[in-house]
Image (cartoon, rainbow, N blue to C red; front, side, top):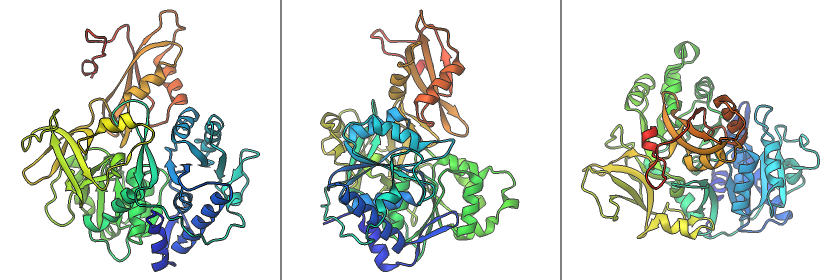
Length: 516
């Protein structure tokens, strides 16, 4: 038997009264988080959720996330975390594609009415039988009449539960990613994949007796979910949650909660580094004394930003590399030993990485090729997509689609992401998906999406479009507004350029390199 929920249960057994989760002024000990997760598991079982059933979860960084996440796992079901910025059409796609039987959705805020959008997506999904609203007030009513709340599901359920005996190879989590092309695909990650990746904490650094993680990375994403939440519970740490990154809030929490570990994407470090009057607003000496480790991933960390941050806060930033399909960690700069700025480190324990050419032959040291990976972290495959799985799993190696080099010491350097992918503020944006949505606009006949350099976000999304001859006139501003209504906030193009033609090859393929 192996169930990822053992991370929470073992921590509860050893340190039941230690604070597991902090959110604003709320502090929940491990025993309380585990008891609440048990109530969720009991509630799911009571409504008929069976081991192996898929259960979707839309929730920002709130105490609800770990409680529901581990509750789903305890019941033997599969967690399908969804990006909280998805719109109803996108939510319905993910739930339909994953065969979700139930859906937990946070009610959101007036600015981001997640509950309303989630319920609209739920209503469009055939086969999804149960909708549970997570309300800002745990005892409050649902903002949508007739829908059941998480509080109602947990009411009168016992705080104990015998965790289902799942096997190591059973699917624990389905993380959605577009891989290299097309519509989002669900990477099936087993209990073993996720458990071993969480346990890498012991191999990547030496945890202190009591670590405090600031989690501002979204927990629905593999980085925050594995590297901080699961690894944090494995090391019996305290997790202090920040639903949306803001440099003022982040530094305030670091000072208030004596944070020892922070993980983020480069733009987060850039924002904290360039925050005006930070020295007057916060006790930076105290923050520096407590911080023992910072980790960076999701995009290449500019070396100058790394050096300036390390000098200001007296803490090393260690870069790593991974993908949703690799649970996610594949390589990391060692805490003890040689650290090479600009590199994403060496393969972590139990993982092999090669740099290969188009024929899957190893390239000479220092030359560019595709990064391929083998080990305990590799997904089972893309859910219900055997052809897509076979495409990336060739010769027993996962083909990342990323281009990199390896030096004589085995350190890996990312040269470029998959050819057309855009990394906006640490989020992967896939042009083909955006282009397909843009073609739903009544005035657009052709679209090409690229990433353009952006000082703060790394890249911004820009769309080139050709309008239909008989279409009603439309402005770039109107296209931005339409995109905002139809795509998640991190995806939609902020910049439109209306053209009469686009550069193409003889076969009709758009030459994006010329657009760039």
